[in-house]
Length: 103
Image 1 (spheres, rainbow, N blue to C red):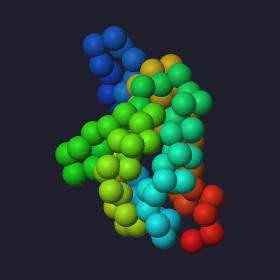
Image 2: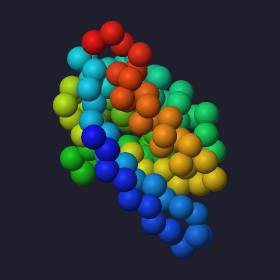
Image 3: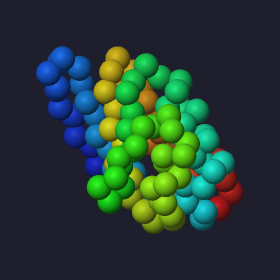
Image 4: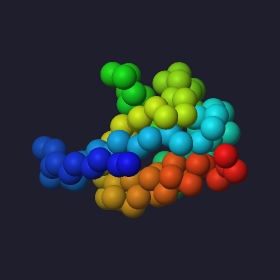
């Protein structure tokens, strides 16, 4: 399940916020997090990831790992910039496909 909101910031660039539920068995472990970061880095967008009030950069493997997002956890992904929508869609697909893991 995803929840999305779109707002405009002071520079008129769209800011997209989407909640994603981690559904793979091991949660956001090192390999899954590396795939998440690689996906973030493909787009011209500023991406952050939040869980339980903690926010980290989408390109920080260590930061994302510190969130401790286990199976069933909800993370909030925020993207802004020219490719924000594309980045959010790609991350939604990645998470929805369990990071390419079998379980």
